[in-house]
Image (cartoon, rainbow, N blue to C red; front, side, top):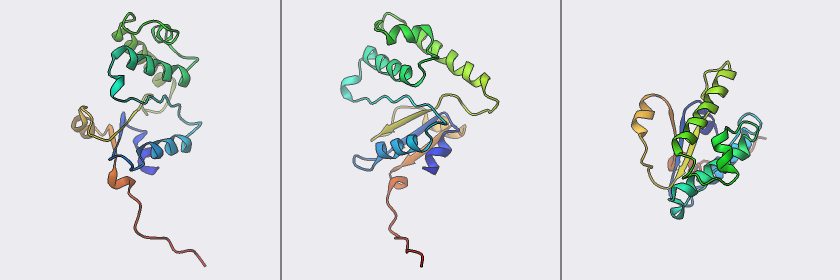
Length: 156
């Protein structure tokens, strides 16, 4: 939880480990751990979700649940059923960027107002080295999710 919490100050947190290592469980527990301090939009994808319209519909729906009072118009249109292919993706991205910028200006802290967590079994095709070099990447790997071999002894 501490490693995931430290990742909240960056732009991207990557939780990567093989099947069965508890990636989703760890992120759900982290989400519960920081409830009330952060809003979360959750999108779960699989191989059938490679269609851009389906992907953006999922993203918009998740954002609508997380930020119902702040949803910009292009996102609201998509959320109420407009085909994301007809509402240009750049306008969706720009609207999301505007939302992030307004949130950033409203906060005195320099913490990013949008942080993405990717849960994956494999290394995603993202510029991880660049994000790592800029200090914008927090990584949780299989070794971090591994149970400890030491068993704490009860206090007497």
